[in-house]
Length: 479
Image (cartoon, rainbow, N blue to C red; front, side, top):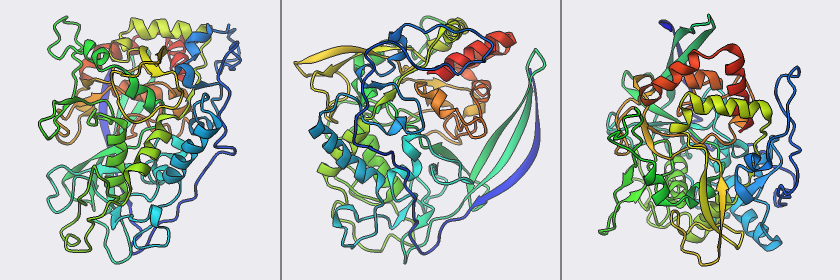
């Protein structure tokens, strides 16, 4: 495999100075109506090449989210509630949705339940970055990518906020430089892999990009037992398989024991509500009981006090419950994709992208934010889910390394990204936006960026025949 560098292109995304942004919300019709769960045969159509004959796979393979699974794989499927909600629970779910999708405004305002935006922020709704509950956009196309700054910009907070309320100034503009390397595989296939060096206002100091992830299966990831995640860790590679998945333990105050991190690109948040509260705080400047102070630039620190919580615990819980109870689109496996799964396992992908976990969920269908880990409910049922992740940190090599260490992790360490819904996320071949900074424009590109612990699997991928690669990609698109 050969590589060479080529070309530099400079880009700038400018902030909207002196005013609020207006977001056109994309909402599904009948958003409070739960889809029927899959209970009979597999009726999901195949997306494989038309000249190949495919046979329906066993239904269990397609129940990616257990009882949270719905048959739909369309553009609105990530916006649906999980199918077992009662009519009353759907109303509760819809309340949380409204505070995630409707615009927050600056305070004071007549809309007191959703004021408190800013003064500095990146978006004014959750759905601005998680479009239709999918992943974010690259900066030239809209919102959904933020910059983490570390200690290189001491006058800012941990995250660049490139928008501001009237009377305040954004901290800066997101700028970037493209660097492309051409990759030639053993069979002669050529790929141009492009990464971006992000910065603030063209500053020579690089910043670290984070793309907003799709909000798929978050409540189910919270239900995975802590012990089951730890059981897959091997930080010193005792079994000498080249894979050394590690837990990111979150240090907490008040003499509480460290908690296992499972959410975020660096597994830096121990619970879904912690992740949601952080997003309100950093992305929208909205304080809560979990984040009472407000990060600011040097010029804004002396402005109005933010002593009062801008989102109550009740509403924070409602938004978190909304996300926790989103449906999981069914997988679309068939005979060819199961052949691809065999290849996936053979080249070693499943060492980190562990296919399934057994989880315990309350028999009552509404998943709540309390807990995360070992379920204490008496009346529970056991289900199998298929996230294709171990939720552990792995060294992904220098090609994917961040600009600096953060969240108690090394620069090259990233949490294994869950693969469920990958086919939906990558359906637009011109703007797939995979990996932590969205650089992967296709599933193949994302694989070719793998290094470190995944280098051997990537090497095996490059040695596959054209038909084997096609089967593997068909499997991944069926997830």
